[in-house]
Length: 288
Image 1 (tube, rainbow, N blue to C red):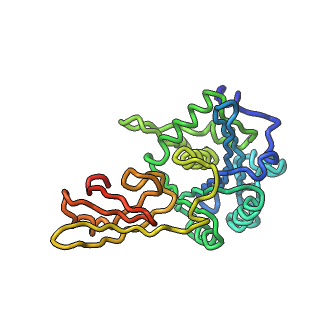
Image 2 (cartoon, rainbow, N blue to C red):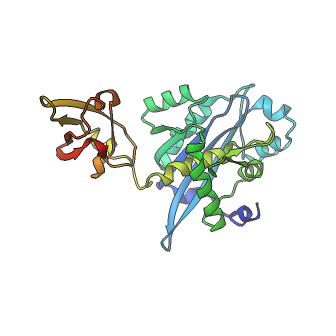
Image 3 (cartoon, one colour):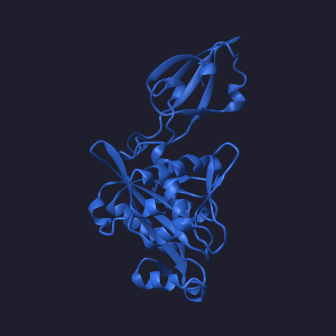
């Protein structure tokens, strides 16, 4: 925790980041528990990337004033915690905050845990928000959690957030046999939602550059299909997967995911002719 404390900047505010690319992650948990929204910005300083985190937290009124954690009331009074009326969180508050953020920052993606978030994500996608599922799995969390540890050690992480600091103190790193790590907590009352949302945001940042909106926003999806020579030429349609970083067939552009049932019928030594947009590549089945 001492290394984390050294990353705190008590003068840090979000206003100077207006108009900059921003990764916004959401961990909704349950409607009677804390929901966290984490906004993360990246700036390059003297050739080194630094990361700046700003959290928003939501709790229903009944939980705030009836909980055993008296810090909730203090954070609510200080304006650090948004209190929604009643006994469950009104997700409309979170949706309104997303709309406000969209008018102030360049939202690149909004990773979210699909658990508890189906309706919210559906509504936001209908409004054009770039919602990206980020499931709570070891595979998804291990690398960004290690990355977070590294930027804290290097003093490249910056925050000014009492609730996030408390949640960091509650995080217990679960380590499996392959040295993968996953955030956990020792007791239910030790909330870690802000830390989880931060790891989700970093996970999306380190798998791709937050340099601007997706190319698909300006030109839509390119059509891709494959032809192969067997007894007679055949054509196989491919489904485009948006927001994936790997190039198709080791050439440039965005990766396409084939219909695996159809791909299975292609002979292993067949030459493939890949049509991607207006470009054509020749390759083999093994390169997919």
